[in-house]
Amino acid sequence: MKITINARKFNVDEKLREHIEKKIAKFEKFFPGDDPAATVKLSRVRDMERVEVTIQQGVFLFRSEEENSTFMNALDCCMYNIERQMRKNKTRLTKKLRDSIRIPEYEVSEPEEEEFEIRTKTFKVKPMTPEEAILQMNQLGHEFFVFKDVETEETCVVYKRRAGDYGLIIPE
Image 1 (cartoon, rainbow, N blue to C red):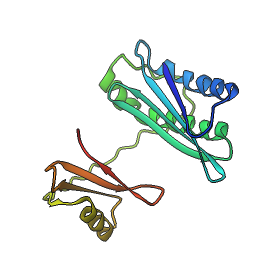
Image 2: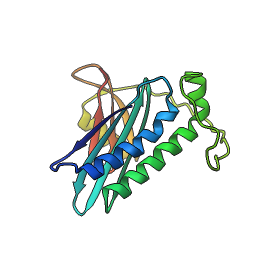
Image 3: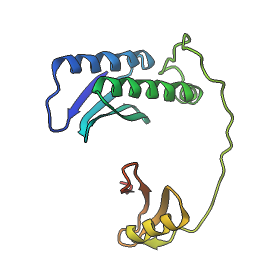
């Protein structure tokens, strides 16, 4: 597994680097024969330490972001979240990748597979600026809003981030 560690405004010591590599290496068993890429971003926000872990294999992306008092605690929380994502998506993954991903059978207390209903909603995508889309999203009380950009004619998405600011997704 290719592991990339990015630290923002500080250097990663050898002990932390080894701990990260050891934790990420445990996920190699899920991807036999493939070469997934893992990216770990470390940063300090106020008095907290933030870890963002992204594991990408083909079209599948597993991501977790945690803040804690230490990087090691935040990393442990991220690893737990990613493992939970893998268990939750086990049946979908095995159908898509057939034999390319092997999910171990010895997992601890696998939750019962829950059936969920996918609700479908159709609406007309109106041309507007990102600012107008944010206003519309806030007016509706949604977390995201799909719109057609006036300038580029592309279908875009604005969304509210955890930090309170907004994000814009533009297709390539």
